Image: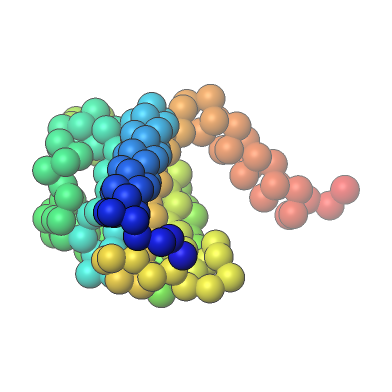
Length: 168
């Protein structure tokens, strides 16, 4: 515990707060720089299904400003038709389940085969996390699968299915 001598403790605490604030800001900038350079849609969704973080790939894939998405409900971000297809997965992730699947998606006239991961902090940590937006939040990551990967996956699926039905 600090001893107050002519307000010096207040000055020291103010300095500590500035250091902590700067460290948090640096950490946020590093996270933003990393996620903005990944070729994937990355978002952080709260328990009310509102966007609390979105990377810059939203601009590339959906022509959406990531900052403008903050606070929007997922239905507003993707529209009622796409939201209806994703709602069940998102609710399961918010309930603590980790989900991964592939599907085709169209954005800005481009059809992509994407690998989607829904996760919750409760599925990756030993105890639920409490945040300013509620518990538990979910993360969503959608990665574009290049043609070479799709071809390899299709071959593996064909070979695997053939191997199960053939008699060696």
